[in-house]
Image 1 (tube, one colour):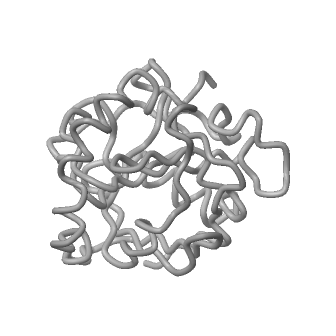
Image 2: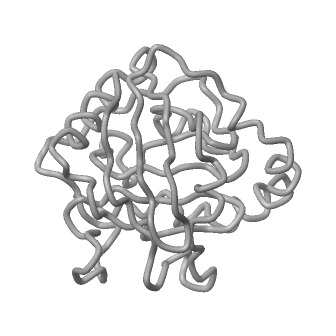
Length: 204
């Protein structure tokens, strides 16, 4: 798989400039925590590190059925257990899900470049906007290259609309997301001793 870190490559500077302006305001309103639980399924992420607690994501199979099916399959396999948040940009997003190169305790030099043993997924772009708490799939320059990596928005990022697939939104534990250890802005958000997903499970 090509380098999925493109999600925060060429657009990182724009993200910080646009997203940071909204971050404190949106954080104070708690808009993500007010999101309603839809028909699901839900992805339940136990986070450990600087952040500790449970994050619940309401998945959206109605707008991204193939992506949701792959993420839930990987979660049921336990593939996401122990995977780190390898790239975290203050005021923008936290990226994780590299089941190949992003396991805690291993060599994380290539974290953000790997994928699962499942095939890449064709884009399922929608009109769903990238707001605070929205979960999207990371990909390379090829729109059809999403596989296992995903990111959670700290703040609105409408410049991503129509370019990345939305798979869900946080309905609980956004305060845990906010506490995830941030990366070095001079290294495009790369995180030293990153927080991790201890377990990722699916609730129907």
